[in-house]
Image (cartoon, rainbow, N blue to C red; front, side, top):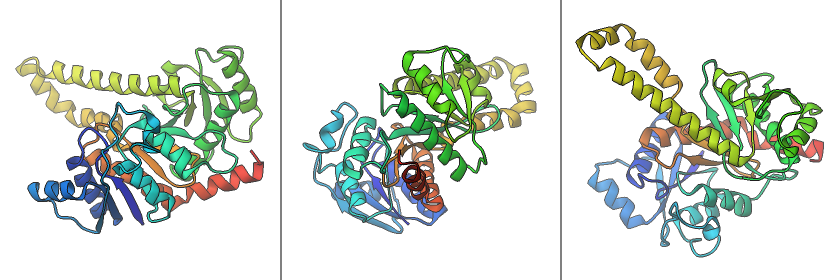
Length: 332
């Protein structure tokens, strides 16, 4: 399988992106198409003694999309950027999936308007696999649609259920709606309408879920509008980081705490790995016709490698075909 990589997307591009792509080649046996300024890619490779393997470089002569650019720039003034060219290659079938750590808005616009939606899907959404105390769960939408109609939320639940079933191997995923209370009567008018639609859906809707219950793994899929979902995502990551920093500080206080740390270090490392967002690398765009993966903007090599892993899962499990089948049958 060929994975198209935006070599100049993200805070640590191109070095960490290239390193992560090469780690993905070694671990997953994929072919990589690096898109970006060819001269700068070769300079980076040479100065860092990186050996390119199973890699093709496609030159793009436009300035990279940065985090402050308007989302629609990928369609016009920056259509020749590494991201813009990457989307064109994916749309033309010259690669099987596209991975970028760049501007989230631009990735969403490119995926929606260049790659286009699966028939029947009203809005694509950004879905992130998140850790919990019990098991990984899927949070969506994480930023593609700040304002949603009830039918969008209903469809997010359907797409999230398909992802957890076919990618994560959960037989009958429990889908919950993020809300400020578990009662059916709680929430905004949109959330209450979405509850009604989801309650009568053909997937396993388990009701509303409060934010405090999400980290305990009470649901396999948590549905929210893009504004609320993005807040949940960033708060979740921030709290996890703050707690780990506090734990490290406690054990470094004095010689006695450092000795104590030796006895529990194995458990702490296991917990750190379980709650580490880098294990999943980023988010997936659900509802578009080809696999598009949004890696974390601050992705290092390991994180980016794991983002490529998401693309591999997509292709191995043929999730898009499964989604097309379900939405076509239901005439959504």
